[in-house]
Image (cartoon, rainbow, N blue to C red; front, side, top):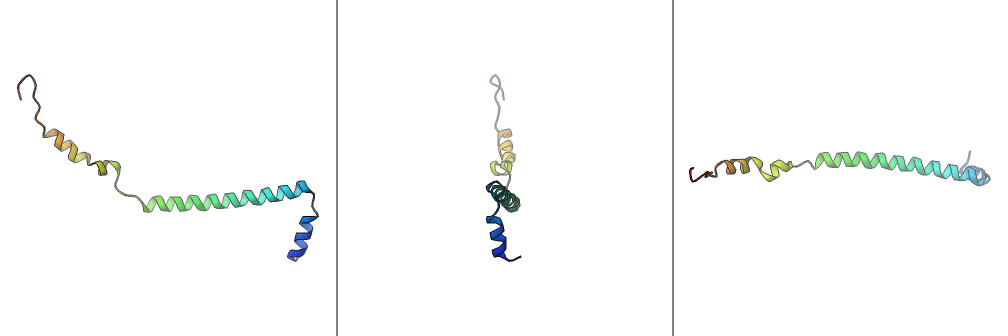
Length: 77
């Protein structure tokens, strides 16, 4: 079937059927774009993994520094 014949056949359909076709194509395109976007997001997140929050804030060094602080209770050390 030639594209011109397909177009003429679609044009001769009632409006309700045309709307169903347009919405069907729109939904299929949306699902395709969503799948593509999620795949790219997964790759982007995987590539950008950097140091964790704990590593960035250096909790280990902070804990060592807190342990080195002398504590004074009732005037005694």
